Image (cartoon, rainbow, N blue to C red; front, side, top):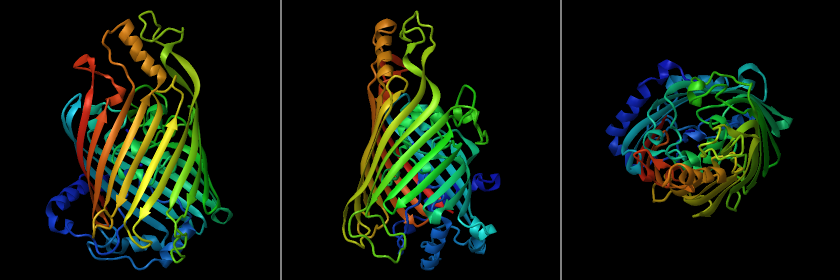
Length: 500
């Protein structure tokens, strides 16, 4: 349910109402692309402020041309907010407000048909401490979430790969609260505080086009880590160090609290309902990642662009020091499906995973053309005895500017695969042979997603989406008929995203 500090006054119904009004009332403007090139609205998994150095950001701002001010050309719906944004910028502060609203409907299979609305309002404030208080190289960030609506996956689908990356329990919560300091002329920076790992680790540039949560924070850590790991909508206290020894190389390493929900039994999001349970009493999570970029874009916009096609390749791992329950065997060596079992799973010390991510542009119409084709792949594995998912794979392709005059639209097709761990598969077989004849076997869940992002304006994006799920949760029994598994599912959705 993951697969990213709002005031109550700003977060209530107003953004949603405005979204609906714009979606229904400005049809003619939706048919035209903004004249200036518009950056697509960020997805929930991408929306945290950039963690580049303040000095670099300031240099880019000084070299950038004046921002468009026309209603359909400017980057945000409210523009400079009557001079408030420029005034904040002069004092080193950047304010952001974003509303994502969507409706998804299950057309077949699952445990129930029907649709659900869900929405997410995000607030962020970033402070460049050099401009604000004279502390060079520092960045302070605070962000929050107001989550509303209901969850289609939990209610109708039962899939492990959640249908949308913004699904979560309805609440208002603190998301991230951290300070970052740049060192060694920007070659190293250290971030400390409450952090969401899906903003920096395991990320794929092209995968974020898609709505299913597995293309943001992947299904393997979401399923195997305690409380789904420190990722949307939860976060953990920790320290992250980033080093850039060369333009093409980046190294990330961090240690975080291993259970963002804290102590207790039940829904992790309810145990830490508002993101203010700053827990350091459970396990520790160690994570590291090495990134290599080929033909990266120049740091200085005035520099010549590389002639080759850009790509990024990543290798990483994580290790959690906690105790993890076996998915098949009890503490006496019997199958948990055996009537004589104690019902207490065998405990394993620690859990870990290795992963690799690749993003590569494979075609571009021209050096200055917006039209390009990108592919991505992400694979990760974990032990099959203590994890429900022991192998996760994402692959996909995206086409930017698929039609003439639609320079900022994106079309994409992707596949998400989650293999059920060996012991969880064995438990299903044991259940069929020992207690429940006809109990379905479990193997793997596969999601296919086709999507299209339509950039109405730089500040407004619409997204149409279709997903098909094979063997939900790997083949769990249908509550209506336990001898049959939950049927394959076809889900359609529409998302609107507005940057205020």
